[in-house]
Every structure is written in C-alpha cells, then in structure tokens.
Image (cartoon, rainbow, N blue to C red; front, top):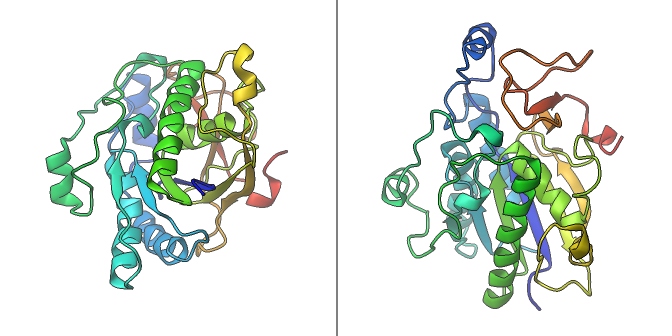
Length: 288
C-alpha cells in the first residue's frame, strides 16, 4: 500500500531561548549555541510525546530526525517506550537534510557530531542508515531551504514506499517543520510568513497522502507545481497531549539573514535571530 501518513514534530522546549544576556550577545553578532539541549520542561514534553506517538494510527514505521541533540532527545523516548511496550521496533535514522536552517549566513557555532558519537548518547540510532544529505552548514535563503526539503522528502517518501511503511515521523526545527508543510501542501509560492502551519514545541502535525499522489516531488519551480500539493494537512500541530498545550510557536519573518537588533513587530517578538517570529497563539487560531 505504501506510505499514507507523515507525522511532523518540532523538537521540545530548548535551553537558551534568548534573554537579556542573549540580546546583548546578539548585538555583537553572537547568537548562542546552535546545538542546544532540551530544557527540563522539554524533556517532560518528550515523555508526553512518547505516550502519544506510540498510539498513533497508522503506527510509525520509522523516525527520521535532525542530527541536533534537542531533536534526538525529543524522539528517543518514543523509540524506547515502543520497545518497552513490546510494539514493533522503530528505526531512528539521523538525516542531516532535516537539520536546522541557519539562513543565508550559514551555520554559526555548530560542529556536527559523528554518527558514532551520537550513538553513544542515543543507542537507538540506526547505524545502517546513510543520511541523504551532508551536514547543513552552508547558507540558504528561504527558497533554497524549501528546495532542500523537496529533495529530501522525495527520497524519504520513495524509501517508505519501498519498505512498506504506512507512516513515518520526522522530527526537526521550527523553520524546517513549517517548510515541510509548505512543500507537501504546495504553498511554496504563497506568502511564507503566515502562521497557517503550526510549529509549537513538541506539537505533532499529520499529513495524509492524496490518492493520486506519486512519490516524487521534482523541484519548486512554478513550472513544476503539479508535483506539489500532493498531501493534505489533516491535523495541524496537535498539542492536546501536552500538559501546557501549545507553546512558543514560530513563523517565518520573511528575512534570510540574522539581524543584530530585534525586529520591530508591534505586539509580536522575533525569535532572537530575526529569521522568525514567535507565535504564542493557541492551535485554534492557526491559519489566520
């Protein structure tokens, strides 16, 4: 039958969200550690996610995660709990193509960990999976980010079809989570700054494959739009299983470069880099 469902999860609440010290460093062009861990609250969210994710229907056949620590910390409890409860073993595959978006300036303060080093921390990581992409260290504008994900999704969908998985789960970062939605829904050439795609911490979105959808998403040029919009967003960033509900959402600001000063956004605040805007609205307001 092949792949029918893609679950997309943003990592849990992380340490080192910008504070007064972070803002001072930002003015000097220092944006904090890229590979930050989950906060204690984020670990609690990951535990709640595990209880929710192992009961998803269709069940998760494989998990693909960004190589960054906070993403692996988010999904490792799901893999472990599935094994403890005697469910099917869920492969945990590290995919650099799902890595963080650093904007057009490229990675800062980030040295990718080797697979062996990550396996030391997360033994459940598959050693037989080879990432489709090398570590994402180069700069990307918004369009290039979406093109990156179109290529990655094409291969992940095809692989899931070959392996007979009905559902896979992808864990990544706010910008990537939103861009995945744009690619699957065919909204790439619309206004990317809307908050139509939810990206709250540890929220789970569900995308369902349309009956006539092929497994290939070619490019994001307007001439290839017939290859986009092949999936439907059936659940938009469900946070109902989380004790605190929807927290610290995100949307694109429209910029592709870090800004040393906070953006002037009226009642909203930026994410500490200028690349995104924090969304604090509840899930019920998504799409407005």
